[in-house]
Length: 543
Image (cartoon, rainbow, N blue to C red; front, side):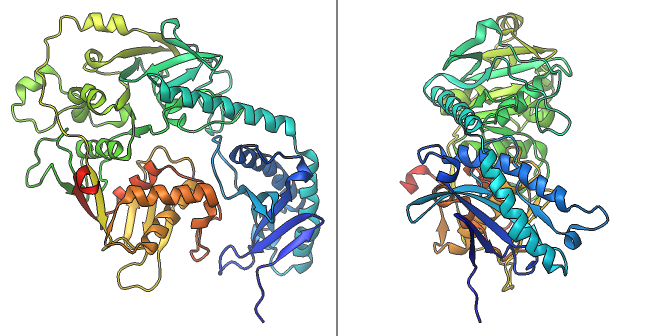
């Protein structure tokens, strides 16, 4: 007899039970569907905010359930346990909590997995049929609409600032009162840390909030060791997403296409033009550069070219994570080295903004080379910012003017051929998909090093990227793939229909949780694949 995956009802709350994986029948996935009218929810409310808020409250109820059954002398497999996704402090689309409309009735859905106790059916029944429904009723009774409204108002204000940034001359905003340093667990603000106060001469007011505005162009953040300059850059990097109340960085809002760029020695690069930064390479082509093991400078050059290709409008660069010879070359070294293939970033950073509208925020502590090319220079002193632009410009007054180097071509686009774009290893009839906690993703024959991707928020986001790439690969009918189009469409589908549409229970080793990624990170993973065949083409070819 074949059974359908069942839905059980407790009063008007539905419990949809399905397999998490065919090898883990003792660990089912349960989606709890609570009608909107039970909690007094408004259909017009932002669904992402509602889902995010509900999940954070639900985590506490899962902890309460586990306290009731916890036995330290037994493993979860013997004892049984409830699991749900524990979100970081960013507000995102997830499959662990979402809104669903069934027969015109609206439901708040919470997804959990349950480890059923080994050979203890009575306890399993008690967990599923008594304890869980009782805790769901407790969750409904304690649901705080006032706090939900506060979360909604916060996101509304954050999004208004984002809209303001789009139409202003600014790339980022850091609200006064923000707490930027993180605690040891990186789960919230550092206790006792100094709150952020903008220098008066760069202070702006947006939507009734005052803070430091970072204008389009080139901004240098400088200061001594341990002054807070890297902490400021990390905050800007995290500001691509909205943060929850209590994070400390609620009003650190950054251009949403921003990417942190670093040297990434050893990464794979396939057929990319790095001539803006590397003029020539012995026994290779800088115009169509490929390598399985990039150097610090070639990897940083490729990372920048790829970011521009993704549509990134703000680069975040820390000199501590950069290749020195890529970033600068002082006058003495220029005089000494006659045949230098590298055009340092100092030579291109202004052109990058003026020619293609890509701004840069640079953390610089050891070289004055960038001072003469910066529009704005912020000095951090014990986590307090000070605008020293004029003072720094005065120091550069007597510098020998640089020779203008020829302008370069920035815009490139690439497509891939479908030859090796597959989740099936060569000669195998079984797909391979895995995300390792060691910083690797495996898709088919590919083992992709993802340790250099600084904008990934969680393991769940990596899992979503893996499943999304697999879906594009197995559904592809084209000989040639325009990646931007395919990924953009897939992400739009996930946003509209639910992040879970890419999930497959076929693969062991995955937790059940997914978070929606940006197109930037999906493309970053694909660009690190070693077996793909990338082809460059002019924009006009595709139009």
